[in-house]
Image (cartoon, rainbow, N blue to C red; front, top):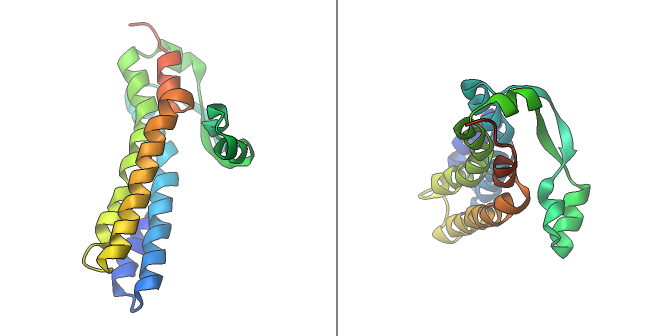
Length: 161
């Protein structure tokens, strides 16, 4: 995340629009990918949910049964957190919902930071492409998460009320 923020600071000073666009795009991808598990962890710690470990694992995208996307998702290794089941089941419903939703929310919202940062520093067409990439990511996550992602996990792991 620090690298992504550094890239956002670096990009406006670059002379060529194409290089700056690529830097903004890399920052956008970093802001999609890396804050996800961190926000789960932070919200989990704040709500009493603990984690066993952090590792590379399979993406839940494979469960969507979309031809190309599911095939890619079954092979793609992503950063994952292993939730401690005992603390998860002893947490209240709001804590569970907040912890699982935090990762999805971060992955959907933070890429817009890179896109918005590009305005005034890139030609409007390139900034618009970044907005389209961030929007496409958010729309895909809104589709994916309730079916096979964090929001589906939130509904399947309710603790006592």
